[in-house]
Length: 226
Figure 1 (tube, rainbow, N blue to C red):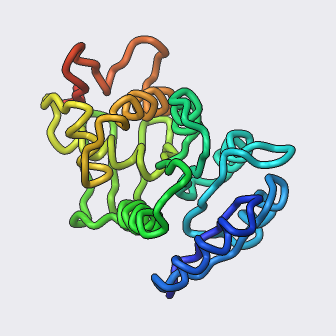
Figure 2 (cartoon, rainbow, N blue to C red):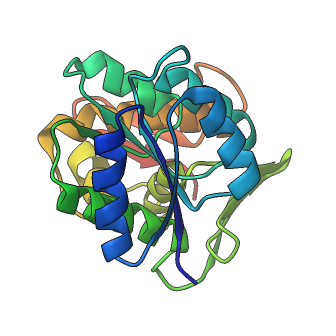
């Protein structure tokens, strides 16, 4: 069955280009041109991935992303004409999985969509990893703690899975990017810090005192379990 992609942009030409290239790549597409209609489409259509423009009328993409993440873990690729790094980092902190800056190559967009969807599908062999009181289940794509199941975005899950796969090993930001994106881009390295902050909010028992994900200053991160 073809994957369904929701395109959210108020520029008809952008929607048309995205739709044409995604359809040529055998994806089904639906579209919305503002925040409220995007939220309604997510609830109604249950898309497999969302391409979300940052600059929307009335309700901007950051607010839309924030609302989606209250109920859904659907992968989100943010589309933005802004060049400020701060906007991109905020989007990633809210739970976006990737971003592309306008003007963009439609072929690159299709590649990014495929990459994120592959992460969601979990191309690694199915496995369950248990370390201390944390269980990471690749079969069901969930993390379980004594307090119950923890809801993670696809990117958060892959970062945690990479760290958990080799407890005690220090991973640089570049290595974590390679693990979740397949290629390292220096401009994305700060995004790893945003995802780590989100992960800690969800899995660490105490704020400010990480038990699982440890920062190795000047190098990167490691999982502290045994």
